[in-house]
Image 1 (cartoon, rainbow, N blue to C red):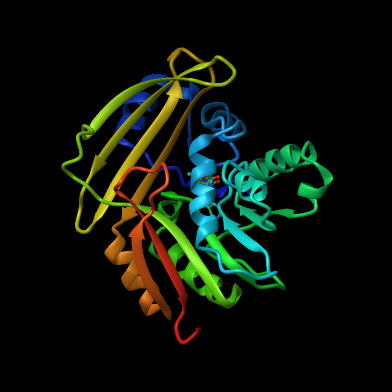
Image 2: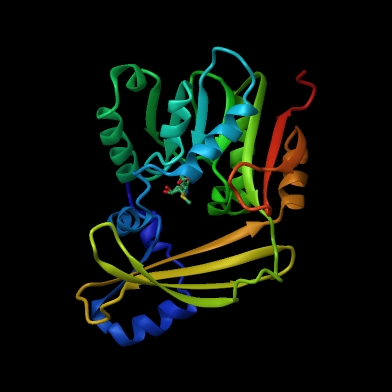
Length: 279
Ligand SMILES: C[S@@+](CC[C@H](N)C(=O)[O-])C[C@H]1O[C@@H](n2cnc3c(N)ncnc32)[C@H](O)[C@@H]1O
């Protein structure tokens, strides 16, 4: 797979400063690109036990209609949420854009009991444009993850989901609420230590143009003399829930919104959408 995301990386204000001082050592890439996959996995550590993920899986499972069709998890990463869903006995197809993430998920799966392996399929794919030969009783996106898509990507997502929901199926999406007055500062630095022991710096900046919340993240080695000096950036345009509801309704879904609950903060909501006219 070509690494388009590495070329399309956003030049955040922090990346600008770093690139100017790193000169030819500086390499800019998107945090979710193949180029950054090693750093992403080092930092995210989404391969261990995660009590929050178990709680998320329980919340999602409580909204999945009964039936024999499998569940589709979109943008599954290395399986942080996938494995807790499997632990609940569900049959899961996990779709993820990054081939390296899918490879990690498959490696983890190979260590699981044969009965669990038989209930999981991991595929490389784009959640903005996917096609399967089967339908699903639920399509799930973990809290916050819909923000990786832009407007056109979300339009493609809704069109793809429409084609893949089994009768009575639910489209379930966790969405963080926009909150300019949150105690969190608008700009902050944070030291990070990867699973490998390597040290990184995270710069996080957010602002509120129009009805969306924009987050720019820049992650780079704490050792600014590193060669090469990989600067990983990502811009998340978090659409507010009203906008996602309007988009889903325009795309032909009936929608309800409720607190996500479980172990997630109060400002995380659950969008439940079903095909209009589908009872
Ligand atoms: C915030 S992580 C979430 C991973 C996982 N769902 C979790 O909860 O830990 C976002 C994931 O979305 C993936 N991603 C980004 N754009 C995507 C797309 N268009 N289609 C599928 N996956 C995508 C990234 O590679 C990354 O693994």
